[in-house]
Image (cartoon, rainbow, N blue to C red; front, side, top):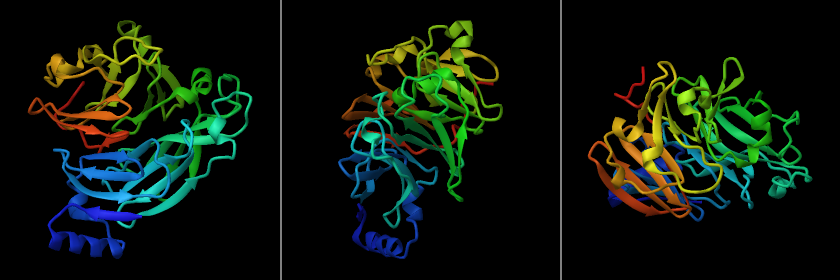
Length: 326
């Protein structure tokens, strides 16, 4: 493990001493807006993509999520493409805790006839008190009648876990879920699946945004913008073709209002490339163009901030001040 700070020597030394004393780098954590991965290293950057510090780990890094205060990272770690063990990194100390261990057959859980399970796409709640994640059961792959629930929530403070009830569709397709997203009030979880399903955590009922006739062709969801706004692809795609920026819509969960996202955030369509993943936090938009390159865009200034060669990247979650779909 190695923690490096890209700062003036005297300031870096003081923060290094704080890290040795197991104290989080508070001053720098508050400036972190972007975290990305190259090989076995997490890079922590500000809103201009300037690297503030980096943390090396000695295990593979899969899908990950950054806590709201930037002091912890939950990530999947395995050798396959379908998750692995679930781990928690404490940034200041570099300590990695094993939260959930994959089974020996986890590398082949996408094969229906094989047993095993793995954990993938962890996601911190907006308060940072819980982590939701996918449980990829080997025998459950493609089996809508399986009793195995594909989602769990872990309380960060106690490490207690609970399974979330789903429906036949979600139990059938846990292997293709690439992202979970919490609503800002922590009442809902959305999934990047066709027909834009979401889970009401209070009633444990699965519903679909596509039940609204105006979204009958809805594709995947890309998280939240504002207190009650869901970003959704206006056209269903069941293959891996890139998404088009012009297809993105903002759907008001309470008001049932519908508007083009890029009109809402005042971003010219021609400024954005086709993408496979998208994330919005405050005034920043992060688009994954392919598996190795991401674009950071500031729609307050309407400028592309940086293009980063990275396997994975995430924005640090913030409250979306000023955005509303009421």
